[in-house]
Length: 463
Image (cartoon, rainbow, N blue to C red):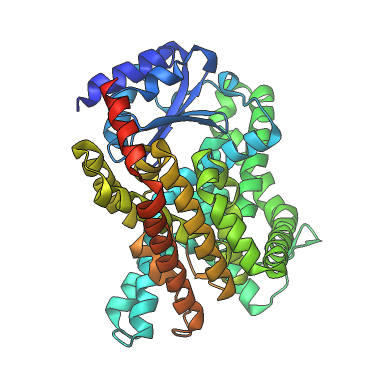
């Protein structure tokens, strides 16, 4: 595959580089923000060699590439001559429903850090597994260093999210990162742990521990963006370099400790309590429904609305039950693709479904969904059924994710081990993965890829 050629074709079919406001990429997708989406030839792009499909969601025109997305992205940015940082603020004002804008906002903040977040979470999960099995102790130097490597991201998450939120809100990301650093400054954390009192200009400060927090820095970054716009209008250009940043820090950091932080923490707790209340009504039914439709939500990018809730649960109550319900869906899609790989006689489809199955076990489902299951229709339905059953089992055993964030695949499984030790909860979670995989595999083998479907594929290919 010529990545340069594919990049040229994509740029041409989205309406040319003049129609592109910005472009970023995730694990498998190019995510464009276009000036006019009607100029993009969706069907033509879907049929390009190297493109799996196109999804329009959250104000983004998403071109699903697969594992080669980073190489195509590099060629695209070369050709258009700008990356997401070069975007004109006025041109990228979001349109659409409030929910669509919310999903776009959340994905913009969390997408840049998802890779390292998953890596840190997986490493933390492996450390838990090794200590539970007695193969490593917390007193060992290797454990301490690797724990710092895994926990450092989550401990200083306000700094990293501050930087990412600054870019998303189109403000100075170094200022927002500095605000995040102030929230987790060691002296403030020590004062909170010691129960000391603090006031600012005789205003009492409600000290809280903002390490591993999510909501406070996002709201603070939003306030920074609004304040910066005002200051840039009233402060002469010759004085902006120093005084804009100075005034923002003098105003926003105290405000974050006095107002934004405490309100955000209480809101985070309410969000976690609300999620747990809904979950506790019936974990089995919740798992059956959510896991059954989860991959459909992922297709349209709606899953980003759940990411802050999952992370907030981890940082607020120490575990997350939602990802415990949904983790099996990756294995369901993988099982369906694996069944197609074993049953099909078509060389190209066998190669594609085999590759998709391997990617699925590693936590990347787009090749399985867009390359195999969705085009064949029935395997995707069988995978949704398998996912629903697995989610119900996970709900029955109260499966939970601990101390981090796992994005999917076999390497994230240790994240679901309780730090207190192995229990029926984890064994039930592992059973949910096996049930999802086996159900989707067997149903696809029996009903999802029949002789009639294979013949239709041959006819379609010939046409």
